Amino acid sequence: MNNPFDDKIRQSLENFEMPFDATAWAELEKQLPTDAPVVSNSSSSFGLKVAAGIALVAVTAVAVWYFNADEELAQTQEVTIETTVSTNENVAEVEKERTSKAPTQSRAKEKSDEHLNEDIAKDLNTTKFNEPQTTVEAPQQAAVQPSTTKEISQEESDGESKAPIESEKQDVSAPLLAKFVPSAIRVCVGEDIVFINESSDMKAAMAWDFGDGSSSSELNPVYSYVLPGKYTAILNTDNGKTQSQQSVTIVVNPVPTPIFTGEQKLNGYEAIPLYVFATATQPTETAVWSFSDGTKISGNKAEHLFREAGTSVAKLTVTNSYGCVSVTESKYETAEFNLLAPDAFSPNGDGINEVFIPKALPEMGVAFEMTIQNPRTGEIVYRTENASFPWNGTLNNTGQKLDHGLYVWTVVLKDNVVENRVFNGKIQLQR
Image (cartoon, rainbow, N blue to C red; front, side):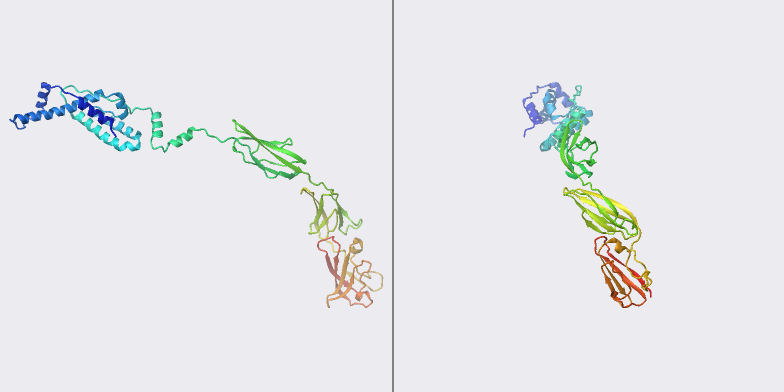
């Protein structure tokens, strides 16, 4: 690849003609060393003059080319050449900037040009003429505005920083999109719904409309409907430039509204904590009663005997066909209950405490089975399922008198009035 600088020098040398100047020759001879041996041979003197003439022609040709170089060549090479020693630093700076802008594939060629330019500048600075010296400065290509230099170096250098600059200049923003997902689209009255916001710009203003006259500006609101129906929940987003909207239909199903009643079954027998419970339900609703002792009874009615002392709880759970649930409960304070069984009886014919039966069994009116056992022998001495046939102190109530002492009684309730249906205790047979 031809270099314009080399071609320009070659063309100037070929076309240059130096007229003979006797005064110049005389001045050149004066600069030769005085102690040089005198050559009498005319041919040697002529050869020396020819060599000096060629050197002078070369130097003069370079100076003529430099003064006549057009502005385009100076801008292409971006080299500052001065004929004084003070311009050497400017030449180095211009050469450094030029090499940083040039493509990578031509840097090797430019380095050879750089050495050539330095040699020429050196020759110009070291060559002295008797004529007055003139200092010539090339256009100051190094004085470039900082902003222009930064733009060229980043766009034309290795190309590594070009992409980041373009990405910073591009104003690429995703379109605003309102989006949310409710935790459920079918709920019951009073059930909380979490509205999960998935919009593209979380910093945008959020305006929620739940479709029942209520609204919110929270990012992820939690809301519950108080009436059944079908509602359209809407999210409006606004980032100051654009707006977006999304809507979702929410179906709110009704919940049961049962009537809860509970009262003692035996009026006037407060010592017997037997209660009856009732509720009114729809045909599509189911009711389940549960009590603090673990007893569960299904249906609109239930009876329960609170046998434990303290606070007892009765709970009603009604579920409709939508799966919506209503829970109602009531609390009761009761004493420890063991069927009101006495501790002793004396079948001696005086008419007082002649038989044994837990006092609550005849009043409660529930099915049961009672057994009497001799703890000394393990023998069952009496068994009954009728409160009208208490134990009279004989073997199976046949008339054979049993011995004086302690006996163990057990009553198992057959009706579903309590979870723990077994009652037991000790009775003292007195003779």
